[in-house]
Image 1: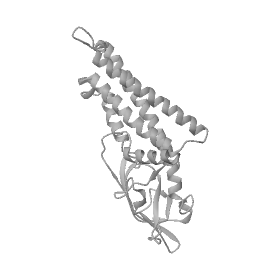
Image 2: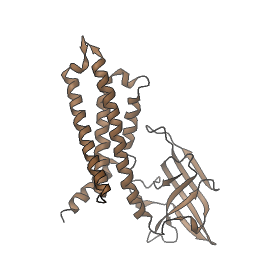
Image 3: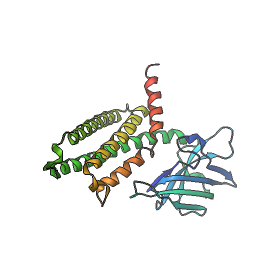
Image 4: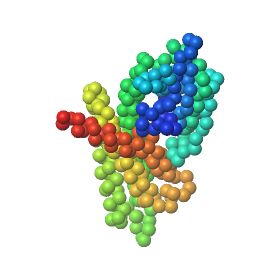
Length: 262
């Protein structure tokens, strides 16, 4: 099992601002710098680290390195987070961590090209989980609305509650159709970064809105106690930042759309 480490304290959406470096010295490679908000990194035995060539400051060369996490000079610090608490999120520092040339992951200078494809896959997968989570919240709320009695009848018979479910159903169906189209494109080798960004942005936001509406239907049951919808709400709020922020998805999609008409 291995994980990827790209984000840094000063380089989030702006991946080109990476400061972590690798330097060749006496036949070895030495890794220095820090990464933050790295998912699944508390106990992973290996990690692929994106770093820039310390010997080429004026013309950045970005390369990935396969790092054994048991090596001296590595410090892992767990971070607390709002949602997705079933998985770790850590800051990792590298202090003269010694590597060999054989630890290079892929080709030198090809780091950005590889992670770009990885980002597209991640964003599509995040969108899929967003849809599944929203569907679970929708079903929980629908069952509750048909069973919860207030003012002498099930709350699902009130028009304001019905309106919420109509809007939730529209969003869920739109998510599903968008994901099916993206999956078809992926199978046929035609999916683009714009497609992945569209799925990530729309599904993360639509799913959050569905879960928020479902929580409103559940009322006190949703915000007190241990109902899973409170976890859904926290997790989906994280997904509007992790894996690429809403703003970066909009920028990526906008460029992709206009590029089609040049």
